[in-house]
Amino acid sequence: MSQLYAAGDDVHATARHEESHLDSSPVLSVCDLEVQFPTPLGLVRALNGVTFDVPRGKVLGIVGESGCGKSVTARAVLQIIEKPGRITGGSITLRGESETTEITGLGPDSKRMRALRGSEIAMIFQEPMSSLNPVYTIGAQIAEAVLIHQTPDRDEALRRAVDMLRQVGMPHPEAAAASYPHQLSGGMRQRAMIAMALSCNPTLLIADEPTTALDVTTEAQILELIRNLRDRAGMSIMFITHSMGVVAQLCDEVIVMYLGRIVERGSVDDLFYDAKHPYTRALLRSIPRIGGNRKAPLEVIEGSVPDPHHRLAGCPFHPGCPKAIPGRCDTTVPAPSTAGPGHTVQCHLYQADEIGHPERAENV
Ligand SMILES: Nc1ncnc2c1ncn2[C@@H]1O[C@H](COP(=O)(O)OP(=O)(O)O)[C@@H](O)[C@H]1O
Ligand code: SF4
Ligand SMILES: [Mg+2]
Image (tube, rainbow, N blue to C red; front, top):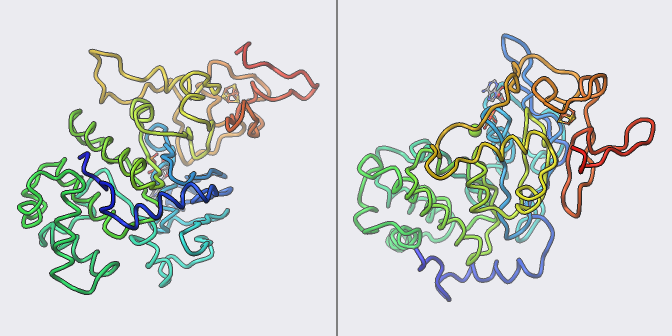
């Protein structure tokens, strides 16, 4: 895998890498995003005012338990939310190489939005079969993407497809290109999907739990591949995971989500050495230890994942929070407060209270 984007073999990647030093504006800015799903049982508020940036040339991790809104956030960026779900508020801004696009100003089926998907923003999923077509060879599918985005020459597109497979560390790339998806192992399919996502040289790569279904060794290889994309190609990556262990291995910055809200944001060091939010601390306790089951689900604080149809007043975490302040946490949503440079937390414990006594993190 170390050959990935070896010096001089990818002009676009090199150019972007240089540009990443020049341009420090975030590649993606999401502001106050709201997504709702009307269902027969009532309205599900999947995202309730989500705000974050994806820094250029870095890996932003999005972590949280199942159902907290990670995939909906990713799908909102691509405007592929399952109907009748829809974005009901907020904005999403993509700062591409040549232009800035207000994604929320585009129709989900508009020409510009279709052009953005796959070319400027590529997504890889937990289950590669959801993006691979079972009736075409891997090579043909990657070549199709190359034909759309890079060259009209079919033979050249196939050559580039094989080269792409080689770059993502696929063993026997020629044979893999001639194979159908079901003939490959899960790890190989995941590499094939990453090769397809990269074939159009995207500005932003979104990875939604791409290693969750893989064994530990293959997961480590895929994480190394993604690290290489950041380090050698300067790619900006939004990496969704439910595992704090994966965050530690891969990410530069992290947002922690709980029930459709961001509860804490900071650098990996902020979160691992100075976590503030009680929910982040619970997640940290969930990291498997040596000898433990590392694929085990996150520790869930009892009663912490309420029915999504039921809208809770106050902090969404209050029913399971060991630090909840009665009369406050169950009535008022905490506003974000600064815990340090680039480190924010949304919890009443870190806010000056109504009578002006700041409650210190040290006391928590
Ligand atoms: N198609 C859908 N219909 C109704 N509700 C949905 C749908 N997709 C997602 N949701 C709601 O959005 C919440 C967040 O889902 P999701 O983003 O998929 O969670 P995760 O963090 O596990 O990726 C879910 O708990 C669910 O309530
Ligand atoms: S705001 Fe209150 S309930 Fe919510 S996490 Fe902080 S202490 Fe717990
Ligand atoms: Mg998900």
